[in-house]
Length: 160
Image: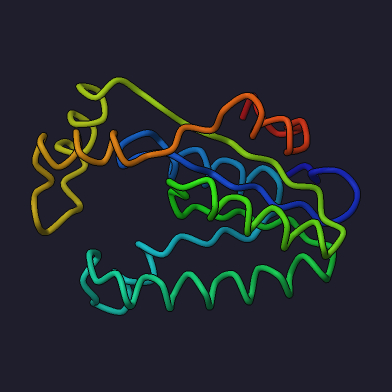
């Protein structure tokens, strides 16, 4: 296991379902000795509906509270929420910066056919995700622009 550098670091992993967020975040977690927060895992462990937005928001708020405490201790934290909107990524970035943390954004993507195939193969959703639903999500997802990416630190961890 290697350390991610000196000082606290927040790594935000964003992307649509099937883009590889969990695989990427788990590799970073193992390589960096980081703490990873993924609401789907908490919802599943608590036998809660993955699509219960109210509970998801509460879990993400709790994860962010713990994440900020860990950043204040100088640790590396990985947020694997999808973070489809820029405002959500901005909130995390600014909150981490206020704690003196470096902040990386890892945005993962794949063509819709690949996303849909991966979702089908993993079969983790109790309610099947339909292609039309995925296409709507593609429209909603705010892909980080070069201007947004410039607000984040250069990744010292890509290549994982």
